[in-house]
Image 1 (spheres, helix red, strand yellow):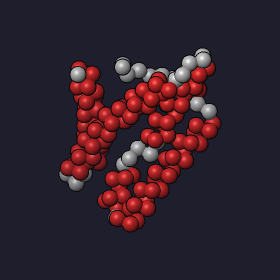
Image 2 (spheres, rainbow, N blue to C red):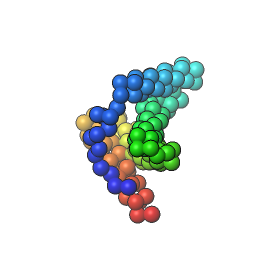
Image 3 (cartoon, rainbow, N blue to C red):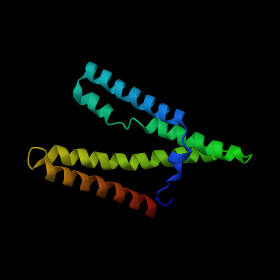
Image 4 (cartoon, rainbow, N blue to C red):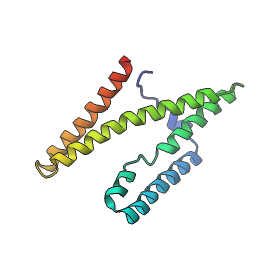
Length: 139
């Protein structure tokens, strides 16, 4: 699959889709807060790093594909599952980039200026994410 920008998705989303994402995001964030309260901020921070929108995005990708197929009289179950899997795969590549960002931040935060640290962290994220994509694409 090629990476491309699809601007049709926001126009297709319904109001309840945004409410669903908001509630999922808030629930994950609140859960991270409870974990931080019980186990401390280090453990809670790891859970806060979980993309709060991920569960909603996967389920919405699946339901949108299933609905599109149903509109033309087909069963879209397989296509919906594939859309959710592709979404999850993209999130995993982004997570590798976030780990690189966090590692660079940890090593540089007390050594360089905030602006330089941010630039190196962003470059690390981009390099790792795109490299992981290229490696996966070549396999």
